[in-house]
Amino acid sequence: MNVISLHSKVWSALQARRQRLPHSLLLVGQKGLGKFELARSFAASLLCESPMADGLACGKCLACNWFEQGNHPDFRLLQPEALSEDVEVEDGKKKPSQQITIDQVRGLDDFFNVGTHRGGLRIVLVNPTEAMNRSTANSLLKTLEEPSAGTLFLMVSSEPMRLLPTIRSRCQVVPVPIPQGKVAVKILADEGLAQPERWLAMAGGAPGLALGLAESGQSAWLDLMASRLGAGRSVDPLLMATELEKAVKDSKGRLQLKQLVEALQKWLVDLTLARNGLPVRYFLPQQTTISGLADMIPAARLIQSYRAAITRRQEAEQPLNARLFLEGLFLDYRALFAN
Ligand SMILES: [Zn+2]
Image 1 (tube, rainbow, N blue to C red):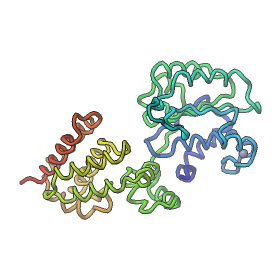
Image 2: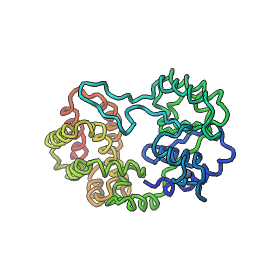
Image 3: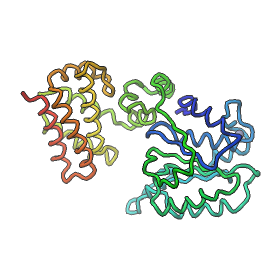
Image 4: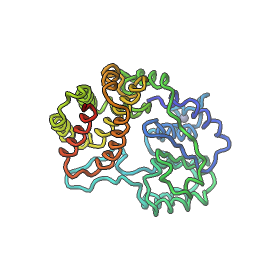
């Protein structure tokens, strides 16, 4: 995904800071906007020996070569093991960590104790910053409080409220907004994505999530769910629960119950919008169906069911029984249409 075109304003703002960099920048914004790629491109741009006019790394110099191969001596990426691309889980082995570990943070000491390779910048990219427990974050904080000269921390976070206030206060915040719909649709289309409008809507405007949804084979269950929900009062909640429980099982962990609840929540938002004569936000291809259904439901009942779905979303993390959970969910949905 071309995150530079997607976030051209943020990119210009970052470039404008080249000459007077703070010790740490915190890129914040919702998930799926390309914040990590943006931070990584900025790091490459700063380390490049002859960046281009728009600040992009040249991709040709020695520094760019090192960077692309992942062994630039003045760059460190701090991220959970589970996020690294070459991680393979063998049967019976421990699962890769979802957290940045304290050993990873301590490992930075060596990095800070030697001079930079070309007498330039030293950059640490932390992704995502919220993936640190308290003691790991405190360990990092020591470095943030007494930064060695020429060091830049590029921190990325989708949940800045979960960070230690002491970490947040050491960083200059760079907000990464949801890009304009038109810009995002064009960039997704350039990526070769079919129906970019549809997927962008389903992802709430986050292009990275849209790509993820479209490419991870998620369309099958979403189509199934939309067609069953579209039946309104004729929906068969028990059959629907059976079908979707099977989809969850067959996905081997890629589809989770909470995603089903989230999809239902989006459907309810669309029903509420349609009830008020507004265009739907998420399920674009089902606009007509949703408008037709919305007129059959009393508005108060819709609000109530949305509240219930919020509770269900929490329960979905640890349901006692997936089938019963889904049956309850869809029985509630049919009850919306009761006389
Ligand atoms: Zn270069």
